[in-house]
Image 1 (cartoon, rainbow, N blue to C red):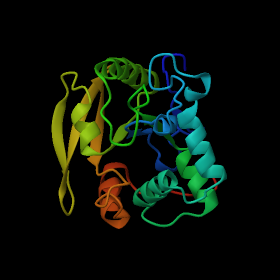
Image 2: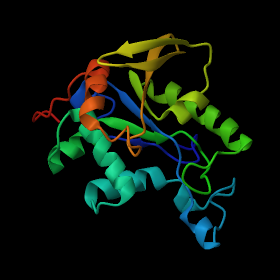
Image 3: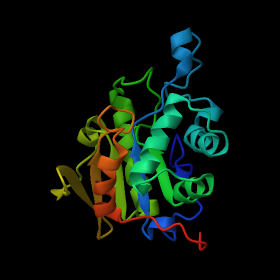
Image 4: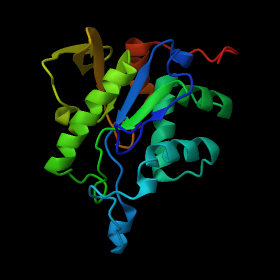
Length: 217
């Protein structure tokens, strides 16, 4: 994982497809530094990140799975998992679902707050790390949280398509080591339009299918 300043969460069943039977990469945007607002940031927004910043994605998912407290960021994960599954999940089902995917925040340097634009250095570092991620884990599909992130992703001579269900959403296709990897745009699950998980479930169902929560996983 030394290829990443902020390591991805890699579910233990990701490689065998878990409840989806597919290798699913969920792509968020960024972490941000809470200490900036208090005037005591110690370097996690720049290249000399603190050691505990490298595990923050893993820490966030582990905290969500072990100790749901209703924090706004946790509600985002809750809304998204319901959009994937098309229903409210039990604790056991939740663990199976998140252990079936990779979750990765694209930007490799923390921003100074929510909805803040990353700097040019962060863009370069993030593109290199994203390419490493795709080559290392070769997902079957990618789900991209939000148009702002989707529009900033590298194109790498890929091609576009669309997925039509009730409405239409954009899909970008990467070619990595001869493998076609489609990346579907969904509205960020913290946004008002992204919180409608029954609506977004129809896209997830068409894109990756229904999860199967059996005894196998």
